[in-house]
Length: 277
Image 1 (cartoon, rainbow, N blue to C red):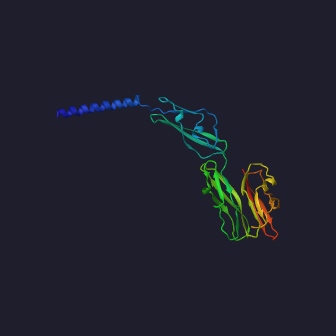
Image 2: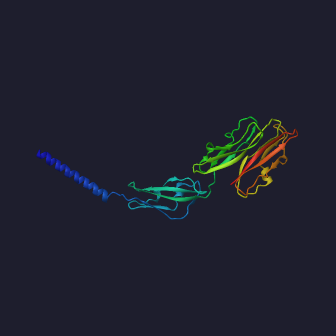
Image 3: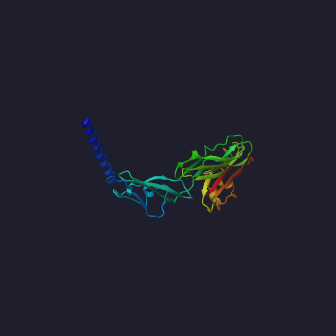
């Protein structure tokens, strides 16, 4: 019995010594101080295609044990946009003891622009036919690339039974939370092989605010025109262009019509939509 008591006491003393040793080691030897990230305070202007290294410009990191950790700074995430071209960047840095610190700051993109739409075919459909967008309307973004699958039709009042020009509104959002909106004309008309044919190189283009677009420029979008689907080729000068709606002094969509009436009295019209940014 006495031997058991002695053994228990010895084990208690051993455990106490070990615990005390680890406690003292942890308090005096183990590094528990987090590193520090310091910013030079200068504004950060970068491209949307900037690398993580570019995003870390102006930052330094130091640690009481490891010294300079600037090369170990990582970009944790980039926030959604705020304002027209700014975002918050979140950083972190770890030392060799797994201590870490975080930091955030604003950056400004020098070349950012909103997502853009493209239209490969006119939004022109025969009476009673199905109106489709997927085969001709696409969207792209400087950050996300092709975002056509995110296009949403927000409003429409198209009647496929009545000839006319109907506006539809489409929108698309990129991963940064920025949304582009466009109002496009849908033409419902009766077209046969005897009707004129007008093809444009583009059916949707972008212009800068207050940019001047001449009639010569607008005619340059005409790729080909015929009296009918297999008829005589027409000169671009034969096509009537109505650009009275065009106003580049304000942002938004303007529609320019290209039309022609052939010798049979059959008319055909397509639109070029100009989006002023």
